[in-house]
Length: 302
Length: 302
Image (cartoon, rainbow over all chains, first blue to last red):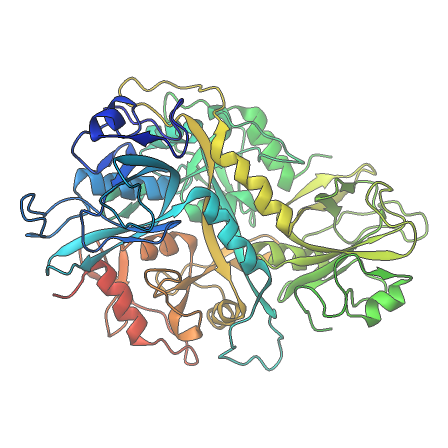
Protein backbone atom coordinates (compact mmCIF):
# COMPACT_ATOMS: atom_id res chain seq x y z
CA UNK A 1 0.00 0.00 0.00
CA UNK A 2 1.29 3.42 -0.93
CA UNK A 3 2.67 5.58 1.83
CA UNK A 4 1.04 8.97 2.24
CA UNK A 5 2.95 11.22 4.63
CA UNK A 6 1.35 13.95 6.66
CA UNK A 7 -2.26 14.67 7.58
CA UNK A 8 -4.99 12.96 5.56
CA UNK A 9 -7.49 15.43 4.09
CA UNK A 10 -10.83 15.30 5.85
CA UNK A 11 -9.42 13.65 8.97
CA UNK A 12 -7.99 16.34 11.22
CA UNK A 13 -6.16 15.71 14.49
CA UNK A 14 -8.69 14.35 17.00
CA UNK A 15 -10.76 12.42 14.44
CA UNK A 16 -12.36 9.31 15.91
CA UNK A 17 -12.72 5.89 14.26
CA UNK A 18 -14.78 3.09 15.82
CA UNK A 19 -12.67 0.24 14.43
CA UNK A 20 -9.50 -0.55 12.47
CA UNK A 21 -11.70 -1.04 9.39
CA UNK A 22 -12.76 2.63 9.32
CA UNK A 23 -9.20 3.74 10.13
CA UNK A 24 -7.98 1.75 7.15
CA UNK A 25 -10.71 2.93 4.78
CA UNK A 26 -9.96 6.55 5.70
CA UNK A 27 -6.32 5.98 4.76
CA UNK A 28 -5.22 7.26 8.16
CA UNK A 29 -3.65 3.87 8.95
CA UNK A 30 -3.89 1.58 5.95
CA UNK A 31 -3.20 -1.94 7.29
CA UNK A 32 -6.02 -3.67 9.19
CA UNK A 33 -3.76 -5.73 11.46
CA UNK A 34 -0.20 -4.39 11.59
CA UNK A 35 0.66 -1.62 14.04
CA UNK A 36 3.23 -0.05 11.70
CA UNK A 37 2.58 0.92 8.10
CA UNK A 38 6.04 1.00 6.66
CA UNK A 39 8.94 -0.59 4.83
CA UNK A 40 12.68 0.14 4.64
CA UNK A 41 12.47 1.75 1.19
CA UNK A 42 9.66 4.27 1.74
CA UNK A 43 9.67 4.69 5.52
CA UNK A 44 6.66 4.40 7.83
CA UNK A 45 3.78 6.87 7.51
CA UNK A 46 1.58 5.76 10.43
CA UNK A 47 1.52 3.68 13.60
CA UNK A 48 -1.18 2.54 16.00
CA UNK A 49 -0.38 2.84 19.71
CA UNK A 50 -2.73 0.51 21.50
CA UNK A 51 -0.85 -0.84 24.47
CA UNK A 52 -0.05 -4.16 22.86
CA UNK A 53 3.45 -4.19 24.31
CA UNK A 54 4.24 -4.05 28.00
CA UNK A 55 7.40 -2.06 27.24
CA UNK A 56 5.51 0.80 25.61
CA UNK A 57 5.52 4.13 27.47
CA UNK A 58 3.08 6.92 26.65
CA UNK A 59 3.97 10.34 28.02
CA UNK A 60 1.59 12.26 25.77
CA UNK A 61 3.92 14.25 23.55
CA UNK A 62 6.64 11.63 23.86
CA UNK A 63 5.94 7.97 23.18
CA UNK A 64 8.39 5.11 23.66
CA UNK A 65 6.99 2.76 21.04
CA UNK A 66 7.89 -0.91 20.84
CA UNK A 67 8.47 -2.19 17.31
CA UNK A 68 6.99 -5.18 15.52
CA UNK A 69 7.58 -8.90 15.75
CA UNK A 70 8.19 -11.81 18.09
CA UNK A 71 4.94 -11.58 19.99
CA UNK A 72 2.58 -14.50 20.48
CA UNK A 73 -0.79 -13.22 19.28
CA UNK A 74 -2.70 -15.44 21.69
CA UNK A 75 -0.86 -14.75 24.94
CA UNK A 76 0.47 -11.29 23.99
CA UNK A 77 3.90 -12.25 25.38
CA UNK A 78 7.21 -11.81 23.60
CA UNK A 79 8.46 -15.23 22.43
CA UNK A 80 11.43 -14.24 20.27
CA UNK A 81 13.72 -11.30 19.54
CA UNK A 82 12.55 -8.36 17.48
CA UNK A 83 14.91 -7.27 14.69
CA UNK A 84 15.50 -3.90 13.02
CA UNK A 85 15.34 -5.62 9.63
CA UNK A 86 11.63 -6.37 10.14
CA UNK A 87 9.80 -4.36 7.49
CA UNK A 88 7.81 -2.14 9.89
CA UNK A 89 10.75 -1.51 12.21
CA UNK A 90 13.07 -0.72 9.30
CA UNK A 91 10.35 1.64 8.04
CA UNK A 92 10.48 3.58 11.30
CA UNK A 93 14.29 3.73 11.12
CA UNK A 94 14.00 5.12 7.60
CA UNK A 95 11.42 7.70 8.75
CA UNK A 96 13.86 8.73 11.48
CA UNK A 97 16.79 9.09 9.08
CA UNK A 98 14.72 10.97 6.49
CA UNK A 99 12.82 13.06 9.03
CA UNK A 100 9.50 11.79 7.70
CA UNK A 101 6.60 12.60 10.03
CA UNK A 102 4.50 9.65 11.22
CA UNK A 103 0.75 9.77 11.94
CA UNK A 104 0.08 8.45 15.44
CA UNK A 105 -3.24 6.80 16.16
CA UNK A 106 -4.08 5.83 19.73
CA UNK A 107 -6.44 2.95 20.53
CA UNK A 108 -8.70 2.54 23.56
CA UNK A 109 -6.54 -0.24 24.99
CA UNK A 110 -3.51 2.05 25.39
CA UNK A 111 -2.41 4.09 28.41
CA UNK A 112 -5.67 5.47 29.89
CA UNK A 113 -4.11 8.89 30.50
CA UNK A 114 -3.66 9.54 26.78
CA UNK A 115 -5.99 7.14 24.95
CA UNK A 116 -9.57 7.47 23.72
CA UNK A 117 -12.34 5.79 25.74
CA UNK A 118 -13.39 3.70 22.75
CA UNK A 119 -12.09 2.90 19.28
CA UNK A 120 -9.22 4.85 17.73
CA UNK A 121 -8.23 8.52 17.58
CA UNK A 122 -5.83 10.26 15.21
CA UNK A 123 -3.44 12.22 17.45
CA UNK A 124 -1.31 14.06 14.88
CA UNK A 125 2.19 13.91 13.44
CA UNK A 126 5.20 12.69 15.36
CA UNK A 127 8.81 12.47 14.36
CA UNK A 128 10.98 9.46 15.18
CA UNK A 129 13.73 11.02 17.25
CA UNK A 130 15.84 7.92 17.93
CA UNK A 131 15.65 4.19 18.33
CA UNK A 132 17.42 1.46 20.23
CA UNK A 133 17.25 -2.20 21.11
CA UNK A 134 16.64 -3.39 24.62
CA UNK A 135 15.87 -6.50 26.59
CA UNK A 136 12.11 -6.51 27.11
CA UNK A 137 10.39 -7.68 30.27
CA UNK A 138 9.84 -11.12 28.71
CA UNK A 139 13.59 -11.61 28.19
CA UNK A 140 13.68 -11.07 24.42
CA UNK A 141 15.16 -8.19 22.48
CA UNK A 142 12.77 -5.47 21.41
CA UNK A 143 13.21 -2.45 19.14
CA UNK A 144 12.12 0.82 20.69
CA UNK A 145 11.42 4.13 18.99
CA UNK A 146 11.28 7.50 20.70
CA UNK A 147 8.41 9.37 19.02
CA UNK A 148 8.02 13.09 19.70
CA UNK A 149 4.99 15.20 18.72
CA UNK A 150 6.14 17.32 15.78
CA UNK A 151 4.95 20.68 17.12
CA UNK A 152 6.00 19.95 20.70
CA UNK A 153 9.45 18.94 19.51
CA UNK A 154 10.29 22.46 18.37
CA UNK A 155 8.83 24.13 21.45
CA UNK A 156 10.77 21.83 23.76
CA UNK A 157 14.06 22.90 22.25
CA UNK A 158 13.60 26.63 22.71
CA UNK A 159 14.42 26.88 26.43
CA UNK A 160 17.84 25.32 25.81
CA UNK A 161 18.92 28.57 24.17
CA UNK A 162 19.06 30.34 27.51
CA UNK A 163 19.44 27.44 29.91
CA UNK A 164 21.98 27.80 32.69
CA UNK A 165 25.14 25.87 32.28
CA UNK A 166 25.71 22.41 33.75
CA UNK A 167 28.54 22.42 36.30
CA UNK A 168 31.80 22.62 34.42
CA UNK A 169 34.08 19.62 34.98
CA UNK A 170 37.21 20.81 33.19
CA UNK A 171 39.38 23.85 33.45
CA UNK A 172 40.75 26.18 30.85
CA UNK A 173 43.47 28.42 32.25
CA UNK A 174 43.75 30.71 29.24
CA UNK A 175 40.37 30.43 27.58
CA UNK A 176 37.04 31.38 29.06
CA UNK A 177 34.19 29.19 27.87
CA UNK A 178 30.65 30.16 27.04
CA UNK A 179 28.55 30.55 30.16
CA UNK A 180 25.36 29.23 28.58
CA UNK A 181 24.38 25.97 27.07
CA UNK A 182 22.26 25.85 23.95
CA UNK A 183 21.07 23.76 21.08
CA UNK A 184 22.50 24.30 17.65
CA UNK A 185 19.98 23.54 14.95
CA UNK A 186 21.83 22.11 11.98
CA UNK A 187 18.80 22.41 9.79
CA UNK A 188 18.61 19.46 7.41
CA UNK A 189 15.77 19.96 4.99
CA UNK A 190 13.83 17.24 3.29
CA UNK A 191 11.25 17.39 0.52
CA UNK A 192 9.95 15.32 -2.37
CA UNK A 193 12.70 16.87 -4.48
CA UNK A 194 15.40 15.79 -2.03
CA UNK A 195 13.91 12.30 -1.68
CA UNK A 196 14.10 11.90 -5.47
CA UNK A 197 17.71 13.03 -5.69
CA UNK A 198 18.73 10.74 -2.80
CA UNK A 199 16.99 7.82 -4.44
CA UNK A 200 18.81 8.31 -7.76
CA UNK A 201 22.14 8.32 -5.93
CA UNK A 202 21.25 5.49 -3.55
CA UNK A 203 22.24 7.70 -0.62
CA UNK A 204 25.82 7.89 -1.94
CA UNK A 205 27.60 11.21 -1.50
CA UNK A 206 28.10 12.96 -4.84
CA UNK A 207 31.32 14.56 -3.60
CA UNK A 208 33.16 11.73 -1.84
CA UNK A 209 31.23 8.57 -2.75
CA UNK A 210 30.47 7.56 0.82
CA UNK A 211 27.12 6.00 1.78
CA UNK A 212 26.64 5.93 5.56
CA UNK A 213 25.19 2.51 6.33
CA UNK A 214 23.11 2.24 9.49
CA UNK A 215 21.60 -0.99 10.93
CA UNK A 216 17.98 -1.36 9.79
CA UNK A 217 18.28 1.58 7.35
CA UNK A 218 19.77 1.43 3.91
CA UNK A 219 21.91 4.56 4.31
CA UNK A 220 21.86 8.09 5.65
CA UNK A 221 22.46 11.07 3.40
CA UNK A 222 21.37 14.69 3.23
CA UNK A 223 19.96 16.86 0.48
CA UNK A 224 22.09 19.98 -0.04
CA UNK A 225 20.93 23.01 -1.96
CA UNK A 226 23.67 24.27 -4.25
CA UNK A 227 22.36 27.86 -4.26
CA UNK A 228 21.27 28.10 -0.63
CA UNK A 229 17.64 28.64 0.32
CA UNK A 230 16.75 31.82 2.20
CA UNK A 231 18.04 35.35 1.98
CA UNK A 232 20.36 36.57 0.63
CA UNK A 233 20.79 33.60 -1.75
CA UNK A 234 17.15 32.53 -2.29
CA UNK A 235 17.92 29.38 -4.28
CA UNK A 236 14.99 27.21 -5.42
CA UNK A 237 14.04 23.78 -4.01
CA UNK A 238 14.23 21.99 -7.36
CA UNK A 239 16.15 18.93 -8.48
CA UNK A 240 18.56 20.98 -10.61
CA UNK A 241 19.70 22.78 -7.42
CA UNK A 242 20.07 19.77 -5.10
CA UNK A 243 22.95 17.40 -4.36
CA UNK A 244 22.95 14.16 -2.35
CA UNK A 245 25.75 14.55 0.21
CA UNK A 246 27.07 12.87 3.35
CA UNK A 247 26.84 15.14 6.43
CA UNK A 248 30.60 15.86 6.35
CA UNK A 249 30.61 16.98 2.72
CA UNK A 250 27.41 18.94 3.42
CA UNK A 251 29.23 21.00 6.08
CA UNK A 252 32.23 21.45 3.77
CA UNK A 253 30.06 22.45 0.79
CA UNK A 254 27.94 24.91 2.79
CA UNK A 255 31.03 26.64 4.17
CA UNK A 256 33.13 27.02 1.04
CA UNK A 257 35.54 24.14 1.70
CA UNK A 258 34.17 22.47 -1.43
CA UNK A 259 32.87 24.04 -4.63
CA UNK A 260 32.30 22.92 -8.22
CA UNK A 261 33.71 24.01 -11.57
CA UNK A 262 31.50 24.41 -14.64
CA UNK A 263 32.88 21.02 -15.74
CA UNK A 264 31.48 19.62 -12.45
CA UNK A 265 34.86 18.93 -10.91
CA UNK A 266 34.93 19.02 -7.10
CA UNK A 267 37.44 21.60 -5.83
CA UNK A 268 39.01 21.94 -2.36
CA UNK A 269 38.12 25.48 -1.20
CA UNK A 270 41.30 25.81 0.88
CA UNK A 271 43.87 24.80 -1.76
CA UNK A 272 41.73 25.41 -4.89
CA UNK A 273 42.93 22.04 -6.19
CA UNK A 274 40.54 19.74 -8.06
CA UNK A 275 39.80 16.61 -6.07
CA UNK A 276 37.54 14.43 -8.23
CA UNK A 277 34.66 14.64 -10.66
CA UNK A 278 31.19 15.10 -9.15
CA UNK A 279 29.29 11.81 -9.11
CA UNK A 280 26.31 12.13 -11.41
CA UNK A 281 23.21 10.20 -12.43
CA UNK A 282 21.85 10.28 -16.00
CA UNK A 283 18.45 11.59 -14.86
CA UNK A 284 19.82 14.11 -12.37
CA UNK A 285 20.41 17.29 -14.33
CA UNK A 286 22.32 20.00 -12.46
CA UNK A 287 21.88 23.61 -13.54
CA UNK A 288 25.17 25.46 -13.86
CA UNK A 289 23.54 28.74 -12.79
CA UNK A 290 23.35 27.37 -9.24
CA UNK A 291 26.86 25.91 -9.39
CA UNK A 292 28.18 29.33 -10.40
CA UNK A 293 26.22 31.19 -7.73
CA UNK A 294 27.58 28.82 -5.05
CA UNK A 295 31.15 29.13 -6.34
CA UNK A 296 30.92 32.91 -6.45
CA UNK A 297 29.89 32.91 -2.80
CA UNK A 298 33.49 31.90 -2.13
CA UNK A 299 35.37 33.18 -5.19
CA UNK A 300 33.44 36.23 -6.34
CA UNK A 301 34.27 37.40 -9.84
CA UNK A 302 35.43 40.98 -10.06
CA UNK B 1 39.15 40.64 26.33
CA UNK B 2 37.31 37.58 27.50
CA UNK B 3 34.30 36.48 25.51
CA UNK B 4 31.06 36.23 27.48
CA UNK B 5 28.32 34.55 25.49
CA UNK B 6 24.63 35.20 26.03
CA UNK B 7 22.78 37.99 27.77
CA UNK B 8 24.71 40.20 30.19
CA UNK B 9 23.14 40.37 33.65
CA UNK B 10 21.49 43.69 34.32
CA UNK B 11 21.22 44.60 30.62
CA UNK B 12 18.11 42.99 29.21
CA UNK B 13 17.06 43.13 25.55
CA UNK B 14 16.08 46.73 24.74
CA UNK B 15 18.66 48.32 27.06
CA UNK B 16 19.88 51.68 25.78
CA UNK B 17 23.43 53.06 25.87
CA UNK B 18 24.27 56.65 24.92
CA UNK B 19 27.75 55.89 23.57
CA UNK B 20 30.20 53.08 22.80
CA UNK B 21 31.93 53.87 26.13
CA UNK B 22 28.89 52.83 28.19
CA UNK B 23 28.32 49.83 25.93
CA UNK B 24 31.88 48.73 26.58
CA UNK B 25 31.77 49.34 30.33
CA UNK B 26 28.57 47.32 30.61
CA UNK B 27 30.34 44.40 28.91
CA UNK B 28 27.58 44.22 26.30
CA UNK B 29 30.09 44.99 23.54
CA UNK B 30 33.59 45.18 24.95
CA UNK B 31 35.69 46.91 22.25
CA UNK B 32 35.31 50.67 21.90
CA UNK B 33 36.06 50.80 18.18
CA UNK B 34 35.70 47.42 16.48
CA UNK B 35 32.28 46.30 15.28
CA UNK B 36 32.98 42.63 16.01
CA UNK B 37 34.23 41.30 19.33
CA UNK B 38 35.74 37.98 18.34
CA UNK B 39 38.66 35.82 17.34
CA UNK B 40 39.00 32.47 15.54
CA UNK B 41 39.72 30.51 18.72
CA UNK B 42 36.84 31.65 20.95
CA UNK B 43 34.31 32.90 18.41
CA UNK B 44 32.51 36.26 18.44
CA UNK B 45 30.17 37.15 21.31
CA UNK B 46 28.85 40.54 20.10
CA UNK B 47 28.59 42.83 17.09
CA UNK B 48 27.48 46.40 16.54
CA UNK B 49 25.23 47.04 13.54
CA UNK B 50 25.48 50.71 12.75
CA UNK B 51 25.17 51.04 9.02
CA UNK B 52 28.89 51.48 8.42
CA UNK B 53 28.81 49.32 5.31
CA UNK B 54 26.70 50.03 2.26
CA UNK B 55 26.26 46.28 1.69
CA UNK B 56 24.59 45.71 5.08
CA UNK B 57 20.89 44.76 5.02
CA UNK B 58 18.71 44.96 8.10
CA UNK B 59 15.41 43.06 7.89
CA UNK B 60 14.74 43.12 11.63
CA UNK B 61 14.99 39.45 12.58
CA UNK B 62 17.42 38.77 9.75
CA UNK B 63 20.54 40.88 9.26
CA UNK B 64 23.00 40.58 6.41
CA UNK B 65 26.08 41.84 8.20
CA UNK B 66 29.25 42.90 6.42
CA UNK B 67 32.46 41.73 8.10
CA UNK B 68 35.52 43.70 9.13
CA UNK B 69 38.40 45.19 7.18
CA UNK B 70 39.40 47.04 4.05
CA UNK B 71 37.43 50.18 4.70
CA UNK B 72 38.89 53.66 4.64
CA UNK B 73 37.89 55.21 7.95
CA UNK B 74 37.81 58.72 6.51
CA UNK B 75 35.74 58.17 3.38
CA UNK B 76 33.89 55.06 4.59
CA UNK B 77 34.54 53.38 1.22
CA UNK B 78 35.95 49.89 0.71
CA UNK B 79 39.57 50.19 -0.48
CA UNK B 80 40.71 46.56 -0.32
CA UNK B 81 39.36 43.02 -0.04
CA UNK B 82 38.02 41.68 3.24
CA UNK B 83 39.31 38.24 4.25
CA UNK B 84 37.81 35.46 6.35
CA UNK B 85 41.09 35.16 8.22
CA UNK B 86 40.59 38.63 9.76
CA UNK B 87 40.22 38.05 13.49
CA UNK B 88 36.66 39.40 13.81
CA UNK B 89 35.41 37.69 10.65
CA UNK B 90 37.00 34.38 11.66
CA UNK B 91 35.32 34.85 15.06
CA UNK B 92 31.92 35.02 13.40
CA UNK B 93 32.72 31.91 11.33
CA UNK B 94 33.65 30.09 14.54
CA UNK B 95 30.41 31.27 16.22
CA UNK B 96 28.51 29.89 13.22
CA UNK B 97 30.26 26.51 13.34
CA UNK B 98 29.89 26.20 17.12
CA UNK B 99 26.36 27.60 17.22
CA UNK B 100 27.44 30.33 19.65
CA UNK B 101 24.83 33.06 20.01
CA UNK B 102 25.97 36.61 19.29
CA UNK B 103 24.67 39.76 21.03
CA UNK B 104 23.48 42.26 18.43
CA UNK B 105 23.63 45.96 19.26
CA UNK B 106 22.10 48.43 16.85
CA UNK B 107 23.35 52.02 16.58
CA UNK B 108 21.40 55.13 15.58
CA UNK B 109 23.20 55.39 12.25
CA UNK B 110 21.80 52.05 11.03
CA UNK B 111 18.67 51.31 9.01
CA UNK B 112 16.03 53.72 10.41
CA UNK B 113 13.33 51.02 10.33
CA UNK B 114 15.12 48.94 12.96
CA UNK B 115 17.57 51.26 14.74
CA UNK B 116 17.28 53.41 17.87
CA UNK B 117 16.81 57.16 17.43
CA UNK B 118 19.97 57.89 19.39
CA UNK B 119 22.93 55.97 20.80
CA UNK B 120 22.94 52.18 20.94
CA UNK B 121 20.38 49.51 21.85
CA UNK B 122 20.94 45.88 22.78
CA UNK B 123 18.61 43.88 20.51
CA UNK B 124 19.14 40.32 21.77
CA UNK B 125 20.86 37.14 20.68
CA UNK B 126 21.31 36.14 17.07
CA UNK B 127 22.83 33.06 15.57
CA UNK B 128 25.15 33.17 12.56
CA UNK B 129 23.30 31.04 10.05
CA UNK B 130 25.76 31.20 7.15
CA UNK B 131 28.40 33.35 5.56
CA UNK B 132 29.78 34.03 2.12
CA UNK B 133 32.09 36.32 0.20
CA UNK B 134 30.80 38.71 -2.39
CA UNK B 135 31.89 41.62 -4.51
CA UNK B 136 30.83 44.75 -2.67
CA UNK B 137 29.49 47.87 -4.36
CA UNK B 138 32.96 49.42 -4.22
CA UNK B 139 34.46 46.56 -6.24
CA UNK B 140 36.27 44.78 -3.41
CA UNK B 141 35.49 41.47 -1.80
CA UNK B 142 33.50 41.56 1.40
CA UNK B 143 32.58 38.85 3.91
CA UNK B 144 28.88 38.67 4.69
CA UNK B 145 27.17 36.94 7.57
CA UNK B 146 23.50 36.01 7.70
CA UNK B 147 22.42 36.67 11.31
CA UNK B 148 19.03 35.39 12.47
CA UNK B 149 17.33 36.31 15.75
CA UNK B 150 17.65 33.23 17.97
CA UNK B 151 13.99 33.03 19.04
CA UNK B 152 12.62 33.95 15.62
CA UNK B 153 14.80 31.28 14.02
CA UNK B 154 12.93 28.49 15.75
CA UNK B 155 9.50 29.97 15.09
CA UNK B 156 10.31 30.48 11.41
CA UNK B 157 11.03 26.80 10.96
CA UNK B 158 7.76 25.52 12.36
CA UNK B 159 5.53 26.20 9.33
CA UNK B 160 7.80 24.07 7.14
CA UNK B 161 6.45 20.99 8.88
CA UNK B 162 3.12 21.33 7.14
CA UNK B 163 4.07 23.37 4.09
CA UNK B 164 2.69 22.27 0.76
CA UNK B 165 5.10 20.60 -1.55
CA UNK B 166 7.08 22.40 -4.23
CA UNK B 167 6.15 21.13 -7.72
CA UNK B 168 7.77 17.78 -8.23
CA UNK B 169 10.26 17.68 -11.10
CA UNK B 170 11.06 13.98 -11.20
CA UNK B 171 9.02 10.84 -11.50
CA UNK B 172 8.99 7.66 -9.54
CA UNK B 173 7.04 4.93 -11.31
CA UNK B 174 7.08 2.47 -8.44
CA UNK B 175 7.54 4.63 -5.39
CA UNK B 176 5.22 7.35 -4.15
CA UNK B 177 7.01 10.21 -2.48
CA UNK B 178 5.99 12.18 0.58
CA UNK B 179 3.38 14.79 -0.24
CA UNK B 180 4.73 17.36 2.23
CA UNK B 181 7.97 19.15 2.59
CA UNK B 182 9.47 19.72 6.00
CA UNK B 183 12.58 20.58 7.94
CA UNK B 184 14.43 17.86 9.75
CA UNK B 185 16.09 19.15 12.87
CA UNK B 186 19.34 17.30 13.31
CA UNK B 187 19.82 18.66 16.78
CA UNK B 188 23.47 19.36 17.44
CA UNK B 189 23.92 20.43 21.02
CA UNK B 190 26.66 22.62 22.33
CA UNK B 191 27.63 23.54 25.88
CA UNK B 192 30.68 24.49 27.91
CA UNK B 193 31.26 20.74 28.40
CA UNK B 194 31.24 20.10 24.66
CA UNK B 195 33.46 23.11 23.95
CA UNK B 196 36.03 21.72 26.39
CA UNK B 197 36.02 18.25 24.85
CA UNK B 198 36.33 19.67 21.33
CA UNK B 199 39.23 21.84 22.41
CA UNK B 200 41.15 18.90 23.88
CA UNK B 201 40.74 16.99 20.64
CA UNK B 202 41.38 19.98 18.37
CA UNK B 203 38.16 19.24 16.53
CA UNK B 204 39.49 15.83 15.46
CA UNK B 205 36.98 12.99 15.37
CA UNK B 206 37.67 10.47 18.13
CA UNK B 207 36.33 7.64 15.97
CA UNK B 208 37.90 8.24 12.55
CA UNK B 209 40.52 10.96 13.13
CA UNK B 210 39.06 13.40 10.62
CA UNK B 211 39.07 17.17 11.31
CA UNK B 212 36.81 19.03 8.86
CA UNK B 213 38.75 22.13 7.85
CA UNK B 214 36.69 25.11 6.71
CA UNK B 215 38.07 28.42 5.34
CA UNK B 216 38.25 31.00 8.15
CA UNK B 217 37.46 28.37 10.84
CA UNK B 218 39.92 25.96 12.34
CA UNK B 219 37.67 22.90 12.00
CA UNK B 220 34.11 21.74 12.43
CA UNK B 221 33.20 18.96 14.83
CA UNK B 222 30.23 17.98 16.98
CA UNK B 223 29.83 16.96 20.59
CA UNK B 224 28.13 13.59 20.90
CA UNK B 225 26.65 12.29 24.12
CA UNK B 226 27.55 8.64 24.63
CA UNK B 227 24.48 7.92 26.77
CA UNK B 228 21.94 10.04 24.92
CA UNK B 229 20.22 12.97 26.59
CA UNK B 230 16.44 12.83 27.02
CA UNK B 231 14.07 9.99 27.76
CA UNK B 232 14.38 7.06 27.81
CA UNK B 233 18.19 7.29 28.12
CA UNK B 234 18.61 10.46 30.22
CA UNK B 235 22.39 10.65 29.98
CA UNK B 236 24.17 13.57 31.68
CA UNK B 237 25.84 16.53 29.93
CA UNK B 238 29.25 15.96 31.51
CA UNK B 239 32.70 15.53 30.01
CA UNK B 240 32.83 11.82 30.90
CA UNK B 241 29.78 11.26 28.65
CA UNK B 242 30.85 13.33 25.63
CA UNK B 243 32.87 12.51 22.51
CA UNK B 244 34.22 14.88 19.84
CA UNK B 245 33.00 13.46 16.50
CA UNK B 246 32.74 14.45 12.85
CA UNK B 247 29.10 14.70 11.64
CA UNK B 248 29.33 11.38 9.78
CA UNK B 249 30.59 9.43 12.80
CA UNK B 250 27.99 11.25 14.93
CA UNK B 251 25.18 9.84 12.75
CA UNK B 252 26.79 6.38 12.81
CA UNK B 253 27.31 6.46 16.59
CA UNK B 254 23.79 7.68 17.36
CA UNK B 255 22.25 4.94 15.20
CA UNK B 256 24.21 1.91 16.36
CA UNK B 257 26.56 1.69 13.37
CA UNK B 258 29.43 2.37 15.78
CA UNK B 259 29.82 1.40 19.43
CA UNK B 260 32.68 1.01 21.89
CA UNK B 261 34.08 -1.90 23.87
CA UNK B 262 35.11 -1.54 27.51
CA UNK B 263 38.70 -1.39 26.21
CA UNK B 264 37.59 1.66 24.14
CA UNK B 265 37.90 -0.06 20.78
CA UNK B 266 35.62 1.30 18.06
CA UNK B 267 33.36 -1.46 16.67
CA UNK B 268 31.37 -1.52 13.41
CA UNK B 269 27.75 -2.11 14.44
CA UNK B 270 26.91 -3.95 11.21
CA UNK B 271 29.76 -6.48 11.21
CA UNK B 272 30.68 -6.31 14.94
CA UNK B 273 34.34 -6.11 13.88
CA UNK B 274 36.74 -3.83 15.73
CA UNK B 275 37.89 -0.95 13.54
CA UNK B 276 40.40 1.05 15.56
CA UNK B 277 41.09 2.27 19.08
CA UNK B 278 39.13 5.34 20.22
CA UNK B 279 41.32 8.46 20.03
CA UNK B 280 41.81 9.75 23.55
CA UNK B 281 43.29 12.73 25.36
CA UNK B 282 45.05 12.39 28.74
CA UNK B 283 42.66 14.85 30.42
CA UNK B 284 39.50 13.51 28.81
CA UNK B 285 38.29 10.74 31.08
CA UNK B 286 35.44 8.65 29.65
CA UNK B 287 33.16 6.83 32.07
CA UNK B 288 32.55 3.20 31.06
CA UNK B 289 29.03 3.31 32.51
CA UNK B 290 27.98 5.47 29.57
CA UNK B 291 29.93 3.38 27.06
CA UNK B 292 28.10 0.29 28.31
CA UNK B 293 24.69 1.93 28.26
CA UNK B 294 25.24 3.05 24.65
CA UNK B 295 26.49 -0.40 23.59
CA UNK B 296 23.54 -2.11 25.25
CA UNK B 297 21.18 0.09 23.25
CA UNK B 298 22.34 -1.99 20.27
CA UNK B 299 23.51 -5.25 21.85
CA UNK B 300 21.42 -5.69 24.98
CA UNK B 301 22.73 -8.24 27.45
CA UNK B 302 20.33 -11.01 28.36
